[in-house]
Length: 107
Image 1: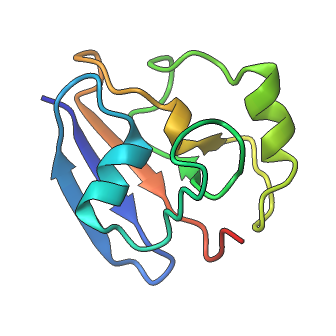
Image 2: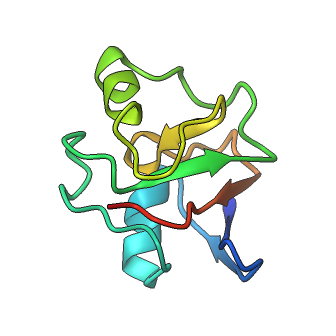
């Protein structure tokens, strides 16, 4: 079962054990993780579920689509090489542990 650690700007961490098939965004919203706003509900229409991927993300998720890439240019916090929209990060059994850093602002 994948384990995702959400790291806030102040260092606070929320660790969730999640079933495969869940997105990093849906899990965060369901658990009340601060900073994942998800205004569009995971429909790839906003950038309010922006995260910075950390440990465990290399090679386990497909690259960003053109639509995600375009939305990442509109994030409230600066875009980085490891910026992703958490609604597009669907967990699989290949993901054992994943760390995502939540930006300080989403809107």
